Image (cartoon, rainbow, N blue to C red):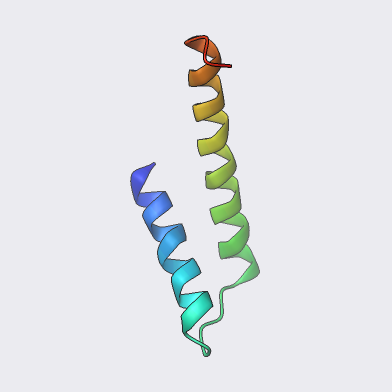
Length: 52
C-alpha cells in the first residue's frame, strides 16, 4: 500500500508543478481506487480498535 501512496503523491506533484504532465483517465481511476481501499482499511482498523 505504501508504494501506491508514494506513486499517487509523485503523480500529484508532477500534476501540480510540471505544466506539460498529463495523467490518463485510466491511471487516475486506478489511483483513486487504491486510495479508497487505503481509506477503507484505515477506517476498519480504527473501528476494530474502538477509535471510531
